[in-house]
Amino acid sequence: MSEQTIAPYPQAKPFTADEAEAFLAKPLIAKLATHNEDGSIHIAPLWFNYEGGDILFGTQAITQKVQNIKRDPRVTVLVDGVDPVLQAVMIYGMAELDYEDVTPKRIALFEKYMSAEEAVGFAESLAATYEPVIIRVKLGHMITFDYSKGMGI
Image (tube, rainbow, N blue to C red; front, side, top):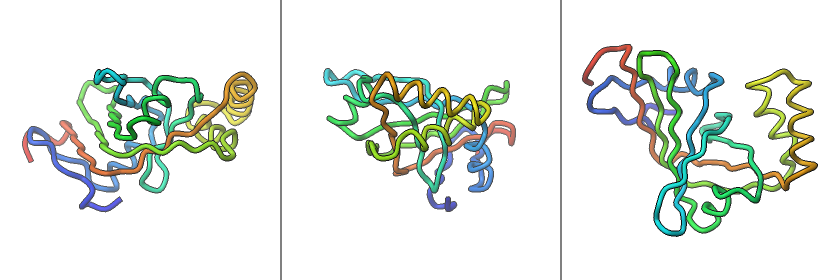
């Protein structure tokens, strides 16, 4: 991730590129916002991986977020910390749906949040019940803020 992809937030200092990557490596919950057909916003909390500048989510093809992305691939992702000091990464990007070799990709994603054995079992049980899909969000614009560094840019 280059420093050029990170825009400052007016009220707080931004992460550096290395800080943003370290933050996105944590097992936090991302909020994925997609556009419903009626113009309202659908927001879903999801586990994610940050991989090569992209955000990856595992889900099922039947979900509202997938249906929304098929119609309109523009998305917003918010990953914020759980500590009292507000830190966050907000990504505006385009989502792509990936149906190829999904189970291994979901296992890799789940291993961020659980043991390897649990990840395999979880991914396989989901794939046995639902058609799995990976949502890959290609970074368009990133805004970061880290209030632990104080106020202002």
